[in-house]
Length: 159
Image: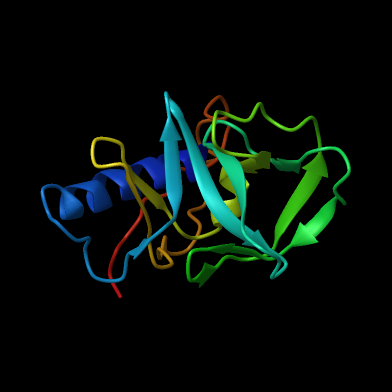
């Protein structure tokens, strides 16, 4: 889990720098339909090919959830024109809907797979990266038994 967070932060820094000040994003990025309300980010997604719905994006939540009345399980998620890897949804109380949006659930960081979200709050833009190659999983050091945790992985934007 720690490794995925480090990988996400590294890619956000790299991709954020690549898109800073530009009217359009770096090659390969896809803009995602989004709404900003206060400090919250809402993404318009299609689940299993159905009509688009709003989900709150929560980078601190590992799991994705849908509100009561929905069916738990794996679903295909489409952000804009990009289909993500299937995402497992649990059932939980739906997040509070802000004015003008009906929110049906939460999209956690597990949903992005090998992609990164680039969130440009000042411009109210959200971009989805192409798959990021993180290379082979490093082997955890056994010489330091107190180190523990996941090995650190970094992101590469190389094709």
